[in-house]
Image 1 (cartoon, protein in one colour):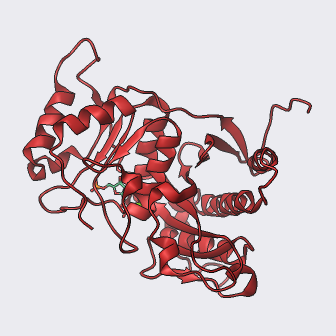
Image 2 (cartoon, helix red, strand yellow):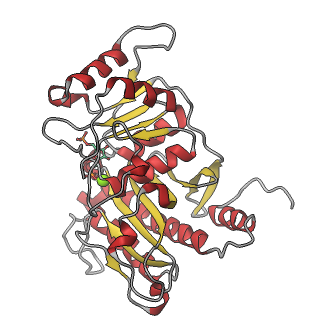
Image 3 (cartoon, helix red, strand yellow):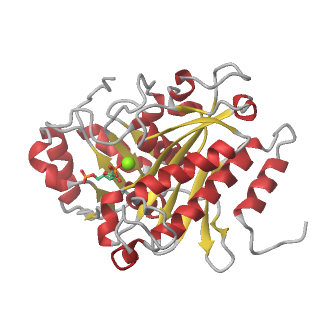
Length: 340
Ligand code: AHM
Ligand code: MG
């Protein structure tokens, strides 16, 4: 095949599918649908700062349509696109209390279900800081030909087929992982295509950045305090003290962690005994991506990906990033078993 420098995500997913003669192309086509939703959401995100001069959210625009809040818009965009996709049997979203099973014949015969956080870190919108969409794809376990069921959505992360995120940052990127690796694509706005820019991403085994909301210090237990003191101590051998970076937008903090190495932590604390972040919408997909890139993700003593969820909107503490940094954190953090 002739070497081509510019590879779009669509072209890439088709090439990847061809490596597996038994593959039907359904997973690739689902990833392309999510990429399409990402482009539509991106278009609205890029106009977010103009809302005040073009009309408040909730106000009626020139076309007579009521303007939606961005997170609601992102949620509806993903649901509508996946509903019309022949490859998705149903979805669960951080924004919806219940799962949505698509009941038409095509959808009922689809193999896959999708979970997503449509616009994570949305409190950052007001200050023009990066935000993101996070998604996970599982093969359903319920009977084909019928609507999907809750069992499809309560699978542990180690059953994921693919997961990824779209980062609306200084540029817009989609990064997704399958069992064969992690690849990143940057949106080239002039042609409206995600182009392969970060092939075969690997998370460095070590890093120099720790990322946590240190403002919660008074709520942390002594093991967390000891670990944070370790991060801030001088040590020439492993370049401590580490730098502290915390955007407060998981997708942005995790993207930096994936590329540069480091550790991202959202621990349990005295007021949130299971932490803040959601297992199925935030932690599992990020854990799957980081592990596919050679990193590590734990909740305490065990791996995030091994937690069997018991409800749709479960939370878990998370320590995720460069494998050596996460291993070091385990030494400090008193084992807090995940309680579902
Ligand atoms: P959200 O789903 O309501 O946007 O909350 C998730 C976000 C993450 O992106 C981020 O890592 C975390 O919440 C920040 O929380 P905090 O402000 O407590 O540090
Ligand atoms: Mg979120």
